Image (cartoon, rainbow, N blue to C red; front, side, top):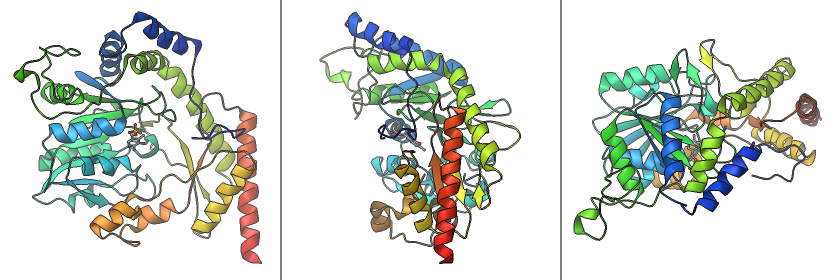
Length: 390
Ligand SMILES: *Cc1c(COP(=O)(O)O)cnc(C)c1O
């Protein structure tokens, strides 16, 4: 993430209260496995409406732990979107299982339940559902599919904190869900993640495995030290420090305000850009409350991937942050090589990923700045068309 741009792609919203929360931890002398993590977990569980929350060092760490807690491993298949952030598939590799990719819907950019169902085999041990760019459309259908086939749904909710379909909060559709707090997310802890679930047994397994597999007597502390019984199983160090957790508590207390301001940014973009021809703005279902993660537009068919790349370069030359969200996961060299995947395998994901442009989205982005971004985008699109007509 580069902040050298005049209008960056994203920028964390850090208040004086956030800074105080972190310095208070430094002064307290307790820097890990302490009260800030307990508070952050309690607040997250309450916000989402789940019985348990387990803080971890990243979103990816959380996804990996859930797969381990569900005993997903070598020989097992996990269905996951081709169009998502690469971590939605990497976690499956970490567990030693096999990712089975599924294409996306061209409008919602999320997977369709019927496409997932067609890929289910007797080896399918989990389905990973992602709210792409924060949009939960399709999650109810995935939850119904998961119930029908008795295959656990893991929600990669890393882009959706605070969003809902009707009264159903993102984070409550599956057996367990994960949120992430990298600096470009709605709220940040610098680095961090949070597992939420109503399955207390699964939560306890994750608590143990985030802390080297130690036998946990309380939420934060080991039962005993120095005995053979202390380490129950193989674990990792996926702990979240008290500094990160304190920042999370402070940020989470402002989530509604942050969501409202990001929503104003998104509405202004939609107003400014819906009339630009050959540009597709996000489609949001009428029953959806969006928690905006990024604002991603798409060029329509006359524009090629090269045009899109030139437009992104043009925006950057004008000091405006822009990026292609996301390259399709199955075309990354690791996945191509290991699973023999190639271009043409997931045509919708590929076509979408060749034409997306993520625009600046953060709290404090002004209407004047948004208009400048939109004007520059239109200008770059026009230039690209002219070049074609030559
Ligand atoms: C941000 C994100 C993650 C987790 O990222 P970390 O860097 O591990 O915190 C996972 N999946 C999706 C879809 C994401 O956007």
